[in-house]
Image (spheres, rainbow, N blue to C red):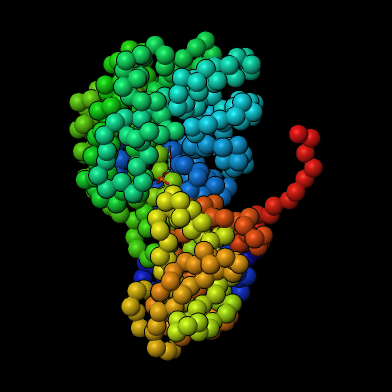
Length: 429
Ligand SMILES: Cc1ncc(COP(=O)(O)O)c(C=O)c1O
């Protein structure tokens, strides 16, 4: 494809849309991926490694762009592993995580050459050891830890309570010998991931402080060399709302000071300190374009029906995996008007509208009362900041609508446009 794009509106959140594109369509701009990466790196202490968590957006071009910038890949399923490999990430730069892995998942990863895993339990260690023995290789793992306590400001706390994630810090400290591995799978580090989507710098810093303290204590208790301390992430990002990425200008300095105390040697990569991010790196690269299919009045409320719904965006919002969906909807036309809550539009009186998708369920409602100008069937809307947990956190198979187009651009130039399809194939088992 060689379409060029036109920039539709001023300001940072301006929709930049390919002309004549069919909808619904996700557009991911790689220039925005790069700038998010640069920004996040500037908040991290150096030296440190950064993993890109594919769960936020496994599109191969997005993954390839982040790998080219220096991110390693954190995957937690056969599909994410395949996506990382397809994007050109070598198996040596892949970390395979996740609280439940089937033997065949491990076999697939080992066959692909993956040698770094994260495990969440003593059973997980034994399972990995047996798998590595079957493949006659030795592998290393990060032991994921579930500490006690709680982090302020966590969008979604991952540990501290009964959880599938990680082994209890207390049990590791009490029985360190159970966690150091077997003949084929040896512990190589610790993996802490305490929370996600923290926009407040102090709260994020507190979460990392907790991770550093726990890592330091367990390192001592385990009494074996640990090459990597993965402190996880928690970097926040706007979700389907206009807005910029949060800044953490004091974070690198704060963490460097704490690491000097708790893990001396980290400046010489002994141990290597690592971080993980999905949403911060990709949220702002994406927008979802959707067209209005119908506009009507229903019991005194204007109802706008779109060609995208929870099958394409926000399917996991009800599960608290992504924040509740209150999408900002930006109308895109030749002289577009950007609409946010309460904005006025020249073309008609603003008014609350119920924004629905095309699915045959009342659950397919993005917003019950959202300010919108006069709009008509055929109008194009854009939902900003949907590059993370967009398509891949949606209910794409529900009701069998085609997946949206995925368009990759780089500063306005279209690089690729394609669509995921689902095909039923006969299977031996
Ligand atoms: C282990 C781990 N790493 C990374 C992430 C990515 O989180 P985020 O997209 O908020 O950066 C998650 C999210 O749940 C996670 O569980």
